Structures are given as structure tokens and as C-alpha cells.
Image (cartoon, rainbow, N blue to C red; front, side, top):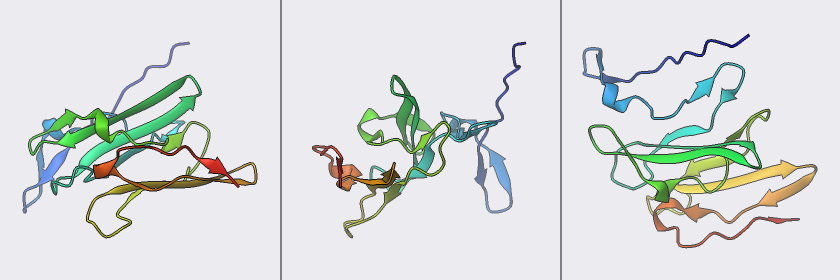
Length: 142
């Protein structure tokens, strides 16, 4: 039997007296899904312009991932692949993967860091500023 899949989506801006529907701000990717939970979508200002942007990285299998980044243009979303997260934020069948968008070094730029225990080994990565990513050092294990 084929399952009937429907999505509930939308965006509303606070007008000071309540909510105003704003379809151009509807998130461009699902934030959560029945039977899956968190799909790895996050809101953060990744380009430093003061507007909240939208990024996601969902690991499904070694051959299949869903990832993307959308910059807030002030009136909606614009795709910007340079800001795609460097590590998966969510994965099917797993809980918290330890990936965070956070300001780490006081320069005001949103950074990306992760640290996840895998089979009793700690996996570390270098934390990199999102705004100044020029390289990516692969993870190493202790």
C-alpha cells in the first residue's frame, strides 16, 4: 500500500500585533518528518549580514545525503552552496550527532564544530569559521 505523503509548511512574520503569512520564507527543506524526526535543518546567520539563514545536512546512507544552504535575501531564500555544512547534522536512525553552528572565536562569524563518539572512539574535527572556510581538515580518531 502506498503511503499518502503530505507536508505541512509555511512561514509567518511577527508584525508586532500577531502573525502575517509570508510564503517566501517557507523553509526550502523539511525541518522534521514523521517517523524520522530531526532532518538536520538549522537556522543561523551564516554569512554575517544579520539575517537568519537556513542550512541542512541529512545523512541517509553512504551513497545518499540531503544537504544545502539558503541565504536570507531579506524577502526570501536564495541557494548558496558555499555555506553547506561540512558534516551531517542529522542521520536516519540516530539521535544527536554532535554538530553545532556556534560562534567560537569571538570574531562574530558563525562557526561549525562537531564531536561525535563512534563505537567508543572519539572523532574530532577542526572547528572552522563558516565565513572564512578555505580548507577542511579530515577528522582523525584517538
